[in-house]
Image 1 (cartoon, rainbow, N blue to C red):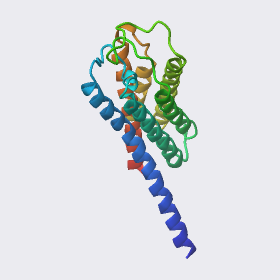
Image 2: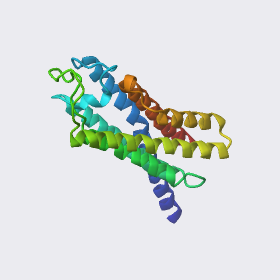
Image 3: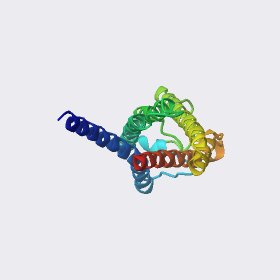
Image 4: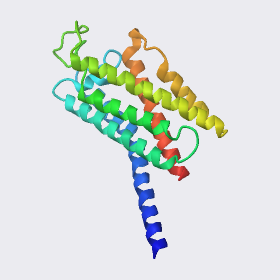
Length: 215
């Protein structure tokens, strides 16, 4: 009787962890599906001039704000899934904390939108803003903190994979960290930020799926 109860409890924990990992795997695809649809449908948006975060401005900005928050919550779920799945080895404590920090940064980036500028939304003066608002400063700081945390997480996973002689995951995680720490070019800022986001979410999705498969 006791063994049956224990087995049931264990199975329940496994199912909850599995759901956390699935939520983490979906965070990136949901984010970019939403952003891509908005980029294609919102008048005046140009990815070569406007970062994805600028979709959070204007009357329809709530869509991108919600997208940031949902992606952040999914990433926090991934952090919980990592903590429950990685129970031994180097990085088992640091990795979920760093991924969780990335998730919190995404949520903050949505709650503190950047300023309208460079002609978007339509009707905004076609020039950079003269002085950033407090929430735009908070947005930028949240984004920097989020991607910095994820870059460190990728380094941690690289070290873990090297110790386990998992060559391909080590190379991919190392490349992810390198991309995320490259300086942002002012001339190509919006495109580079979008690429960084794509790389970051590809890494979190791959990590979630690999952990789920390993279970």
